[in-house]
Length: 122
Image (tube, rainbow, N blue to C red):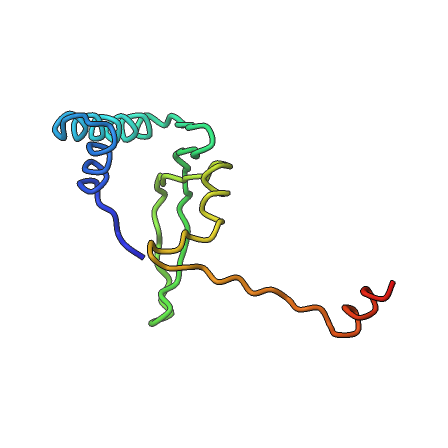
């Protein structure tokens, strides 16, 4: 599985839209900055069929270090939660496409000899 960077996404969008790279980069960065600003305010961001970003409050708790078994206080904090949208979930659940140049071979289940001969005589 590959890691795709913001730079690579900008390049892909540039090729597809024929918009200058600097403009695409600026728009992408402004979009990401706007998401951060809204989450900092505590707002919920909903992108239909893509997903929802929202901030959840996590209360303070006592945890345990598994190595030393020592109790540790974990302070309350805010965390970003992302809930996947329907189209993204369905798209991700599908198997990845075969690489170019690779022919997919489908296996066909053969009927038993009795079923074939019984069907031919009827």
